Length: 387
Image: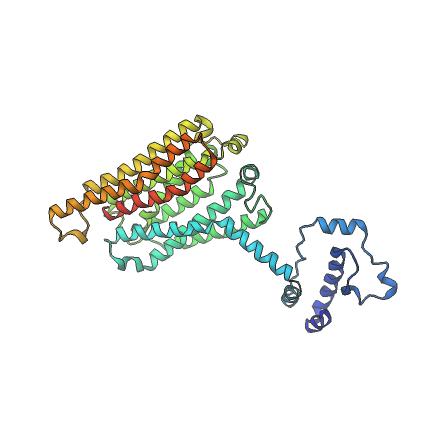
């Protein structure tokens, strides 16, 4: 089979093919059929030494890089393990990018566009909104990748199962991916109007870029920066339609609900990283003030998020869909919405109490972090309906 593949390759690549055969025989540790073209007098002299076999076994087991496309395709067909390794590396990049964050980023942009566009579905079809959602998703992915790059030494202690600590992705690959994404974001932002929108995008990109090397070591600043970047996302959706300034008051309430909810979640995320953060000089709120104080702050922020949504629900005029409903009917709908809001946001405080009751157990903290997005989403939905 090797002879058939070799004969099908361009003349300039046949030497590379035979070089690959000689290298693969060294990795296997014994002479293989790939060395059958050698003269008998040379076969014995070409036996791999113990040092060669040991060095090859200790290597990363990646096959050598070849620039010839035909040869590269032939090797992929001949050696399924090479193809499997490429798939595993691609899966590791996807894991590191945390693509699960793409959906919330895009939803927040479209939510802001829906509110800023007068709650008309036609506003969601704007190409600017689609481009802005792609920009928001790119910033989210780039920040996750760059954070893992800078947090490599911390994750070796806190989360050794991540792609970079377990060496599934090279550090250079993570840095290159984040560079490409940030560059694409800044280039795409140049065609957006108004200037305030470009300013928010540039500031968000800068904040996420400086997050780990600079902001993360400043107590509470890292949490505030993350919450602010996410909270401004709906505002960008409204600004992309040119309606953000007219609805600044209502958008401010929506952003406040999101800001308090995300800040609550960010402080909870620091509770499980106290040991690694302390060893690496990262002065988070739990490290500086202790876990009980940090949990109390998180509880206050959760209550503030719910209170802001409830205030908007109580004071805002009814949506246009309810304009035909009588005054009594509108009050009844508001009361029912308030009850649903309280029921949906109750898990925020319930999970905080569970963390305290279980003495800051890591599993309880993780459950609270995962469950918090549901309650934040409920608060955000009611705030958007009455914004």
